[in-house]
Picture 1 (cartoon, helix red, strand yellow):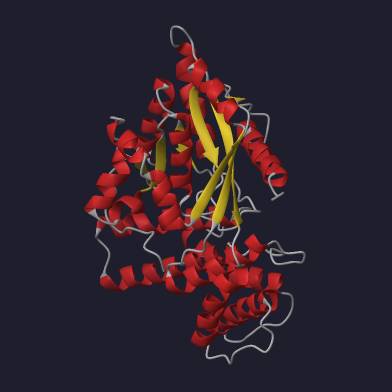
Picture 2: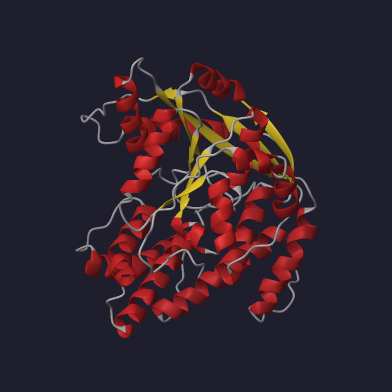
Length: 397
């Protein structure tokens, strides 16, 4: 399990205001993206929309999909291209991996958000950035790294709250100003030899499972077979036996088996239509007392086991049904194998070369007031619709 939960009292990590280090590191970003992450080519589409908003002096929120762990670096490249550094909101656990990483993240514009509770300091800092309007603010409203470039997870409504809070303050300023949201869709294409890069990973996973080398070396049947094998192992571990039937149904049943007893204990049986939101609500209920340091060793161990179950549920959620249906783009195979390796070892090796297309959507002006007559926040709906439209239009290679 990756170290995404920190059982210590939360302390807000504020943004570093000087842009000196951002500009100093800007020249290093292309090397970082190529050497560390395998991205050899960057293309830009729709950047004129963002240039117009910068020229107008708007408070700018960049709401991006989050399909790969290095997406913040990719958006740093966008800032370098526009000669406009940005602030980025990032999960607190990223700042707790060491002093140098914490120092570096702050200098390149990142600040923390506590995902296991209400982080008023982060909300105030984000709002102030938009009100000040000197630099754009980057937020990833999906809340997780999906590794599925062709699927959008539900967007967190905190994005709309931040944008609307800033819009209210800017509207009262003299002279009044605006806050806009630019949806950004990052599309990654793999442009190498897929069989050559994935076969060693599949060989290692099959060896880990004590399987013989496959008779059919074709990638898709091997990947499907490994996925079913890994699901079967988890069914035996948690349900006592392997189930039969469509993989999607078995996957959904295992997720519910993990969620329901936890939601009964911590949330009074209350679930949520969004599976990712269910993970978040459970962590918000379980973690705070662990950070206080008042629990017995037995209780802490019990809660860590529960958090491991939530982590497994989130892993399962990140394998969307039908993602390997034919015709299957090469990126779907690559992303699935990356997810296999990451779920088994907590890390995934770099596969190169990748080409990224950064799609910038038109500005969405933020109204200071929310329409309470709608069940869904209108701003979130507009952002999601724009991202989905860019997702579909960016599929062509």
